[in-house]
Image (cartoon, rainbow, N blue to C red; front, side):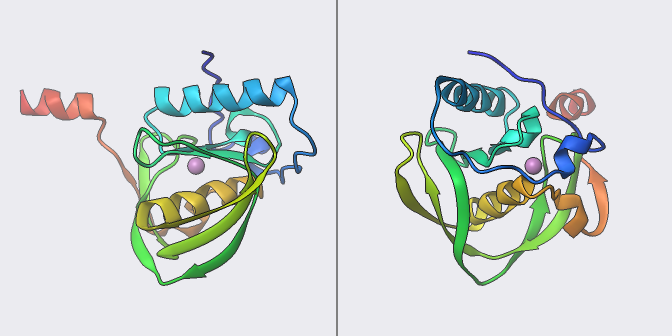
Length: 163
Ligand code: NI
């Protein structure tokens, strides 16, 4: 298990376009394992490779905490509907903002064995797919925020206030 350093907004690597993965290698397998560890350690629901400084088209997503998806070279095939709600990003710590996303997303990607599969999701999963795929093209959710970014009060501070 290895936790990688999460790049934060202002780091130019987060603004770059990532390259497709051509073949699975031991290094990329290790990267994916580390991305999952890093996402869980940070209590995130998704993480894209550029967030750990690697410009490859790989994202990990887990909106339930027990069922991770690994998406390599993902592409959105279909979207429908609309949802408007708060969104955050591990690269923009302590902040959230309101973003409108499709309510349903269908995407295709390769799995860790480089086999194609389709993923479809609604609500939070649809939002996470859109958010993470944006990272692969150098985009952060803050570009899409309606109104101002809000400060998120960390749970520890909330407990202190309540105590
Ligand atoms: Ni993000």
